[in-house]
Amino acid sequence: MTARDRSLLTYIDLASVRVYAPIGVDPQERRVGAWYSVDVRIYYNAKDAMYSDAINHAINYATVESIIRQEMAQPCALIENAAYRIYTALVNRFAHINEGRLRVTKLRPPMAGSTASATFSIEW
Image 1 (cartoon, rainbow, N blue to C red):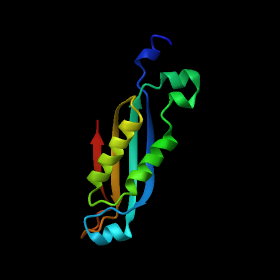
Image 2 (cartoon, rainbow, N blue to C red; image 1 turned 135 degrees about the vertical axis):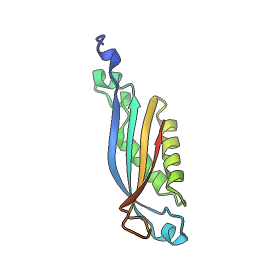
Image 3 (cartoon, one colour; image 1 turned 90 degrees about the horizontal axis):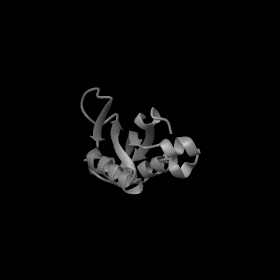
Image 4 (cartoon, rainbow, N blue to C red; image 1 turned 120 degrees about the vertical axis):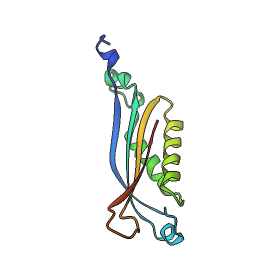
């Protein structure tokens, strides 16, 4: 590791994970479901992964996507609840996450007007 490597800020991004999920305040929304998009950025020390080229030193983004899909599949009223469950599952699964950002977006929410989406974000 070089001195310059010590200052690297490393993270992974998953962008626009599209999920059909039973989330909504109205019981009909939970029965029928709607489309959501989830974005996550996870900061962690990836230096071992960069040097070793071994998946066991990295955060496996396929596992991250699986966690997102599992948590979004759980019926609830609020995207805030779904986002918190995803956050909790990620930090419990990957202890070496330093910080991150998570956005859960409901595409075409059932509101009067022409709102394209509604998003809830968590940063830690």
